[in-house]
Amino acid sequence: MARDIAFKPARSRLAGTLTRMMTQPPGKNTLPVVTLLKRKELAEMAGLTIETTVRLLKDFETRKLIRKKDKDIILLDAEKLKQMSTHFS
Image (cartoon, rainbow, N blue to C red; front, side, top):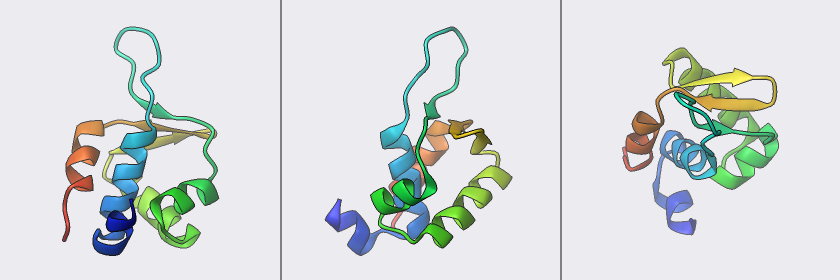
């Protein structure tokens, strides 16, 4: 985790945090979800400011990687987020 904060760009850190926190709801054809996590908590877990976290979440939403629903974040493309989490540039 400390290595991630030191060397990974913000986008990769947030993508990695989302994929680590995701759960798979029961049922057929359900998408992974990150539940009941406040923006501040998510930012702290990723080692980011709240402002950067909010900006990146909006970017992920625009790219159709996630969708925010109430207090949940639905991962529309968890595989792409996993790939993003491994990039160092």
